[in-house]
Image (tube, rainbow, N blue to C red; front, side):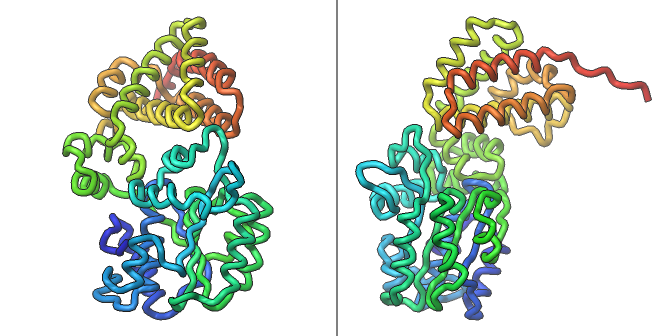
Length: 380
């Protein structure tokens, strides 16, 4: 991965390049931002730049032995750390190396739900366990095999179990001279504070719609119309845009469920609401969380649509057709309540709560909020 392959993030690339060129690379770097904006791709490009023996024009050459090894994911001084699930005796990242290589090859913007599918996580929440920290410490204690630096690239450090984070803390506090840690986080607020405070942090921004649509058309072979639609509703996340563009049927499915949910909730059709809760619960945790994320977006976008601000609306044509009639029911009197209840349901599902109960409770609450009359405006 080269810097030239990274969409956007010019300022961050310049900062990292300057650190490497000046020989002032911090022992621990944290790249943080929303999921799917290319943080991990940039971390890979930076690691390759550090190891490249023939840098040119501010980028790695892509041709030296180190660059070739990076491209093949087999540089002996680059170690990938990522969340896994405990099964069949597997406890550390290298136990899942084959699906990991497939992830980096096919889904380099690192959508977490895709990783969960590849390792067949089911309802388990992948994590970084204490065994991983022990393995990192053992590897860090050895000299670099062929490069000047050993690099540990840790994806989702917020998924570290407390015992794993505490064990790793010492080697981050007192690192070996030839060791660099690059942490890539979707939510740095969940990282152990003592680790967080010992990193040099780079907060990365969402991508522009132009960057996203260009990537989809040039690198994914997506048609221009679909690419533009996906870029509009991806909220700056290339990972989300890829999911939308490569799986448009799921979005249509979510749209149909959302429409019926709101109609049944407004009509207080309790029996059908119970059936919907059972059907959505049967999706499985990860897909259900994606649906709830979609529902939250639709509530937000319908509120914007109702406020007569089409220039910042991110609705597809199909969604807009529904919103023409539905948007008036989402207003300043209920938008925060609806958003809060959907967010709470998503959080409960993430913690493995009973999906049927969570969803039926959510639908009952939605029926109360969506029927709430718009508050009267006070005279000026």
